Image (cartoon, rainbow, N blue to C red; front, side, top):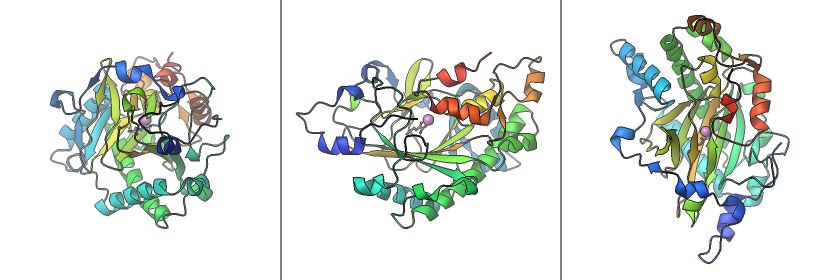
Length: 350
Ligand code: OGA
Ligand code: NI
C-alpha cells in the first residue's frame, strides 16, 4: 500500500519557473550536505567485470576472482561485454523514452493501483509526513512470463512490449550466467543456487527523474538497498545520477557507455550469509535535463525461502547471520516500509 502523491513530471513541467519554490515535501537537507565523491576519480570507480573474460577458459578463473571480490568489497560493479545485442538496448531505450513523453492522461492509463506494485506512479509512500522523491516510476513484472499483467504494459509506443520482452530475455540470460559464477566463487553448487531462482523472477522499475532547478535540494530516489538478489541497471539516456554509499560517503557512479551496472541486493547478501554486500544507493537529479534509468531486479522464486544457504552456514561454523523468511513475506515486508538505507536487511540480522 502506497499513498497517492503528485505526478512529479507534471509538477516539474508546471512549477519549475525561477520564481517558484519547490514544495517542501521534496526538500531534503541531506541532498546538499552529504559529501559526494566524483565518479571520475579513477581510484574511487566501481570495479569493471568483463563477461567475455568470465566465459573464456583462459581468463575465467582470474575474472571470477575479480567478480567475487567486487561483490564482497563493493556490492556493485559495471558489466562489459555482457552480450546483450546493441539493437536490443537501443530499442528498449527508445521505447522507454517514448513512453514518458506521452501526455499525462495516456501514461495514467497504466496507473499503479494503491494496493498493487505494478504500474505507473510511485512506491514506498507510507506517511503524509514523509519526504518525497523527485521522480515517477513504471514498475512491471516481467518474469516468469505467466506472471505478467499485460494491462500495465503500455500500448504506446507500439513496439514497447516487444522491446521490453527482448530486453527481459537477454538480461535474464546474463543474470543466470552471473549467478553460476557467483555460486562458484562462494563454493556452492551452481545448480542449487539456480534452483532458488527458478523461473528467474524478474521485475523492472523504470525511473523518470524530471529536471529540477533546485536539483541540489531534492533526491530522485531515496537511499535504499534493493530487495532483490541481483539488479541490472541500464542508463536509458545520457544523464548520470546514481550514487553509492562507500566508506560513509556518496560515490557518484559514472556508467560506461553500453555497460550494465550490477549490484547485489538484500536477498543475495542473505543467501551468501553476509559474504556479499547489499550496498545503499540513491539517485540525484539534474538541474536542466531529464534522466531515465531502468533497473531489472532478479528475485528468488516465490516459493523459495530467503535465508543463508545451508552449505555456507556450515562453512561458517553453523552460524546463520540472518533470519530465514518465506519469499512472499520478505517482499511484503519490503513494500510495506519506506525506502530507508540498509534498514530492510539489517532488520533480519540475528
Ligand atoms: C532502483 C535504483 C537507481 C537509478 O531503481 O532501485 O536504485 O540510478 N535506481 O535510477
Ligand atoms: Ni536500487
